[in-house]
Image (cartoon, rainbow, N blue to C red; front, side):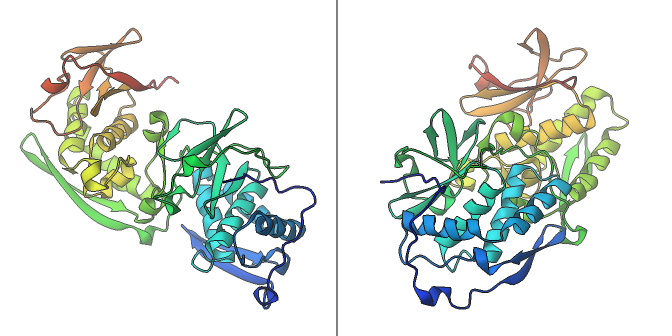
Length: 399
């Protein structure tokens, strides 16, 4: 049985063991967050005890104590950092996680750590919820986007995505019944998984990766700067709409180590040959393996993840090819989703090969994933011909 909680009004205090409250004093703490040190002052008035057992009463009592305490300075610091560094919600949530970890380490008590994540996100204005099911504390947030691969609940026409599903890999979180869901009064903002800007990492935190591929009997070499923190950012990132997925940018140092060199390499080529170069770079500069064999599940890699991953599949290469073409040529493109494959098509001044018609415009297929055939622009793999597809994303530079 589960029940989503409103923490509002007058609550009955849970009796907490006095031994858990001893030594709970104010303290200052800090942690590294990408390229800066984040400092917070934790007042004793917001420190809650460990639960003797997980219950609604524990959460209610903890909220009453923290809500009456001096938490405003922490929230102000979080929101100021979010604004000054232009953090999207997903990256802001990573800051919330680290802050909760600094206040109450996850290894010490998972329930209290999750309580602080919920409290900080809710006090930041997001419609975040807690529930208890099968003696587990489960954390939700209101989201109105096309998100897949993670459990959610519907309540009064609003969709709540589970933020800590990865901690309960074998639990059936969809079985939690949608009880009357209430919330912190000021928390009404929806949460977005859209990532339009990567954080600024410390330059020294990057490592070099050598990549090479052959084009027209010439070998091209690349020393790409990659940051391992990118993998941590997207470790629990869900499946998002293709318009979001394709537009996840590269971080500053990675961009600077790759895009200018690619621009230089295609600078003396005409547009179609340059696109062909980018298509074959995406196709042959990386080893292929499907997600089931690589990760044990479907997982879409951002363009930067694809660059540092040992293996990648068609989703990953389609996103990387799109990003490269967008940055270097900025041409209209569409993504063609087949039952077992995804590929790209680009709009040229004059189409090449078999035309792909969409919304009155003509596109040419550009296959960025290795196939049995050596496909050029405008050529579709034989096993996809006469197979229905769906255009899942259309990019128009004018928009």
